[in-house]
Image 1: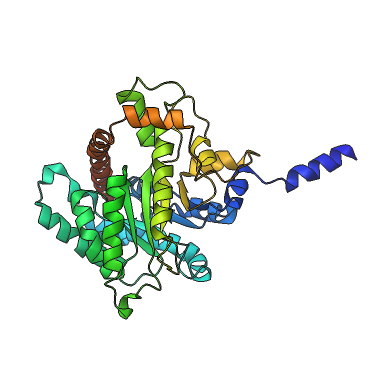
Image 2: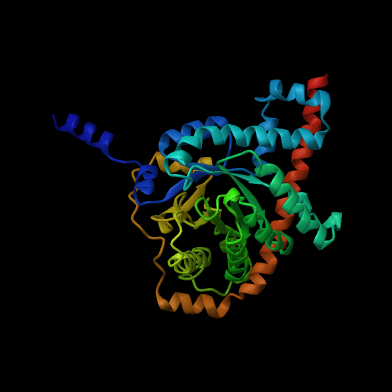
Amino acid sequence: MLGRSLYFRRLLMPNGLESLISTGTKLWLDSVDPDEVAKNHARGVTGATSNPAIISQLIGSGRFDKHMESLFEDMNDTAVAWAMTDYLVSKAQEVFQPIWEKTKCNDGWVSFELDPLVEDPTANMPHDRRVKRYIDLGKHWASGYTNRMIKVPATPAGLEALEALAAEGITLNVTLIFTSRQYKLARDAIWRGAQRRKNGGGGLERFKSVYSIFISRVDVYTEKKVPNLSDDAQGLMGLVNAKRLYLENQTFWKDKTLPLEQEIIFASTGKKLDWQEEDFYPQHIAGDDIQTNPPETNDAMAKTTASFTKTAGELPDKAILDELDAKVDLQKMEDFLMEEGIDKFAKPQNKLLETVGTKRKELRS
């Protein structure tokens, strides 16, 4: 009987993923793979996000060849890449639409990333043209959809486009945020735009915005560029940075009396440093707002019985905070990570176009 009792007790115990969600975290999937979306939706995941690297991998798998054959008849490679992105994001939207309806637009969103080649340094596109391009693309890819967020990077051109996009009633996910400077510019621009909305754009009734704070890339940066951090402080800058922005975001929106939450997305949450456990970042940012995990992180957490508590607003000891403030130059960090981020932003889109071209040749032969 003891063995049987222990067996059933184990069945009733939540796994790590369930425990994380129970703290209040909205868990989104960093993928629009239909199989992964279905599996993770069943686990309690309530939204998803996409990028060119994800789409490229899915196209290269061969699972969507039949759907692509008809596209190749009338479209060039660029058009096919965007048609497939639209198709896969739309499929994910269908899965999460009931959540979007149940929460009255507060959850159940899927992010659609605008063309990263707008920021390609080799294209040498003038700033004003980049801004206009973001506005035009945002309107185009948001039109006709309900639970689709438009993902715009926190580059100079992306930031300048936000007010106009928000004024149009478009729901925005600002990505590639590394510092409070970027966050404030993005937040203030979106809030200005939101207050210009007319009833046709939903006014403020459906106003929702999210701000993707990248975490693990910051810790990779400090390990390489700030090696004089103590053992106690090294590997914590990403979390401290994200938590501070989370608290800043809470304070700003607190008195706005809006029907929907304006949230931080804790992004880049997969382990990056050798000493980290797979759930290192989720353990320290549980309990509030949104977290986007790659499929492998969710798989690993679903196999554990790790117990999570609300930690999103908790900061380390003052001595660690003082050391990080003294040794990490935030502007240098932002400059480096944005240059690296733009490179990582554009390369996957070029890779996606290459993958589409290769697939065209394969299917023709």
